[in-house]
Image (cartoon, rainbow, N blue to C red):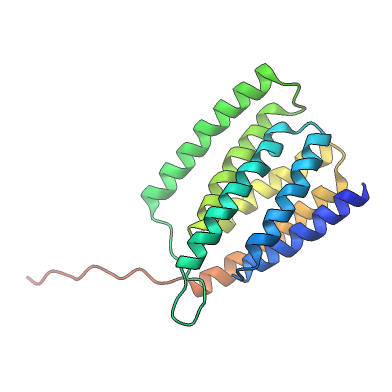
Length: 194
């Protein structure tokens, strides 16, 4: 554990809490967290997660814009349900991404855990995309991914970061509950008269 890791954890927890409470400040705070973790993952040779932080940076910019456009009249960020077809397509893209990243990392780098790193990185991108699109289901995917991340970081000796991801599981549960309560209900299609 280093002072750098402590700062990265603190910034990350703050960013996730702000996201769970649907505060626009989450985006710049999460961008700083990405930069800190980019450096940390570079140092411990988790290259897929390092690249993931760069991609998260781009996704954060996208999410920032999407959330700005996705507010209601009172200024609250509107939460919308995830359509099943969109969920299936996104998860399929995550699987394809995991195979591609894992193959590349295992073949061309000295990555410590190329396949696990690849799977978690790819599905983290799916979860981040769902977050940017304001889908409540993002929190469920984050819970699954974060449970696996805890194990990976413990294997790599990043105890504090493993603790962060354990805390992120709790925050994701809070986020899911809060977003579920704020979710805009789907308008049912009118029933045809007989």
